[in-house]
Image 1 (tube, rainbow, N blue to C red):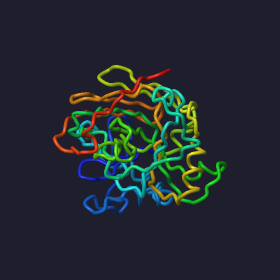
Image 2: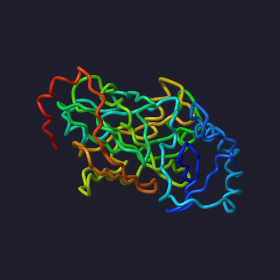
Image 3: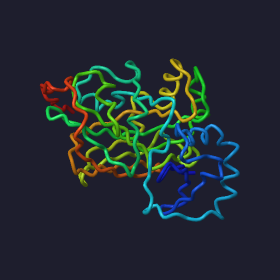
Length: 297
């Protein structure tokens, strides 16, 4: 099942490549409610709600996907957990002497989340570059603490395409990754049963048609069971929490007017546009980032 959010916060199921159905009222949610935790509640109650949804789907009106604005599927998770330097090739290109399996994770703010139909807004930072990072997003279903590797699958609800945008520099990582719109997720969350084995997923990212990143999740340094185990050793995972699994080599600058497209096998495809904003300036980034990263293979 593919769970999406669209228009003014309505919740839908993508039933094919061109249509979705609106299940907002069916599952008892209010699209205008604040905070927007409807999909978190859906995930938490999914075992009970799934048969209700499946029984109703044939009779619900089809809505053309081309006519809706796709929002980030889970806009109000308890947390977004991100693993840095989790592909060896990316570690080499960034000259990083560590990997995720020994470094741990960091957190991104919920306010950085955006959707497939929303732009990445570049902050006004003339001295810096903003780079794209393609990642698999893991959405937690059943929460828990101290989850052993052997039980990881029982705690994963589904998967999504995720881009982790970053202001390149040496300042605090979270600071450079926290801007609004710096974590596009979408176009929907695909439930784990539809994806199957997530350890052999091909992932690609293009900018204006140029292939920039291409990897397979088999190349992860810290694998998916290890990420769930490590995160839950430190903190309780809750339904709707999102894990960003790290990016492979090929990160590069994005600019005003760019179209960034990514695909992940059996998960989906999304294209986001890049626009230059007028805000976001801070004295922290006044000094140019030097020396420039010399990518190594």
